[in-house]
Amino acid sequence: MSDTVLVTGGTGFIAQHCILQLLDAGYNVRASARSASREAELIATLTPHLASGTTLEGRFSVVAADLTSDAGWDEAVAKCTYVLHVASPIFLKVPKDENEMIVPARDGTLRVLRASSRAGVRRVVMTSSVAAVAYGTPRDHVYTESDWTNVEGDDVDPYAKSKAVAEKAAWDFIDSTQNASSMELVTILPGLVLGPVLSSHFSSSGESVKRMMNHEVPGMPDIWFPPVDVRDVAWSHVTAMTHPSAAGQRFICAASDSVPLLAIAMILDERYKSQGYKIPLRKLPKSAVRLVALFDRDLKFIIPEIGKPFHVDSRKIKTQLGLEPRDLAEMTFTMAQTMIQYGIVKSPK
Ligand code: NAP
Image (cartoon, rainbow, N blue to C red; front, top):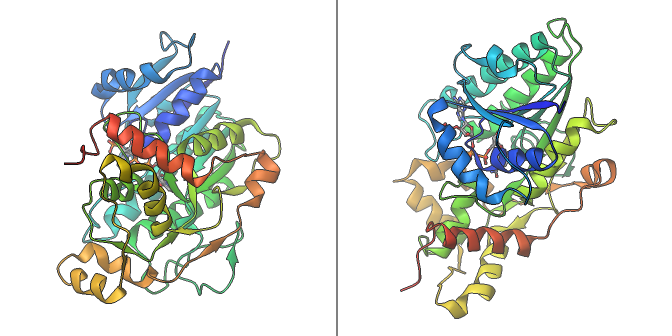
């Protein structure tokens, strides 16, 4: 009989790609969502993207569980061999109280881990982020899996704090006596995730491509991220789930070192200018962003990042797990193209 895998936050961008790859690989999949009523919507989203010959029938179900409550997690992990813990609170608007992000991320992770350990799950693969590595410390070296974001550092945004705090809590749990079943943990730390969206839902990481394509911004602040395709992020989760040497490891998941947002804009301009899309190519000066931030507090957190690229070393996931990542152009085009397909990006006037 095939192993069953729980994927938390099954309604999300990365989780849906994980579910597709798990089903195509022959696993049975249970997805958690905040409401089980989202099962029909999820099936409708996933079905057109399954490899030919793969079916959801009898192999896919949705269970209700929220990171903020104990209810549902024991049922969610029952009889699962593996868990991909992908869910985490993500807000498009920065919450006034950072604990709205940090507490559900940390406590929700512990809920998933406690239930998984009790149920005898063999290994949990958790989605962390480069945000758990590269913030709140001087940008004077190339970041690796040995680095941790300093949550007490200046100007660390609530999302980066939530990812660092949740991942730390997960490692502490795994090494504690609470993990009586000696369950294993692997963490995957993606950079900026691009690549195909599967429906009109897209994660906050798609915002930049959407805004560029829809010309919703006058220019690009000089901000840098290490990019990665969502299909490669999903592949990394599925591979880390069973890879013999992955247990106990963190893996930065990126195609390359950081690139500026402007590099993404230039790729889009080259491809879509002839179709009438007007991609903003101006580098926005820090002073302009600072001025707008007086009225939009969400921008407050990006100001310290402007003109301060951080460098990451993503060799470990390539050498140890064998990731052969898609390049920036491929992940950018497929995101833009599918955003046009699902009406997220409007036709140019
Ligand atoms: P997403 O599409 O917004 O997915 C987030 C998922 O988390 C959704 O399914 C959401 O459920 C669920 N969730 C949020 N709060 C929850 C709660 N209280 N209880 C249960 N579920 C909750 O974002 P994504 O990009 O796929 O992100 C998935 C993971 O990747 C997150 O851990 C994120 O931190 C990490 N990550 C993402 C990126 C990126 O660039 N996209 C980069 C690094 C790391 P609802 O549908 O109900 O809201």
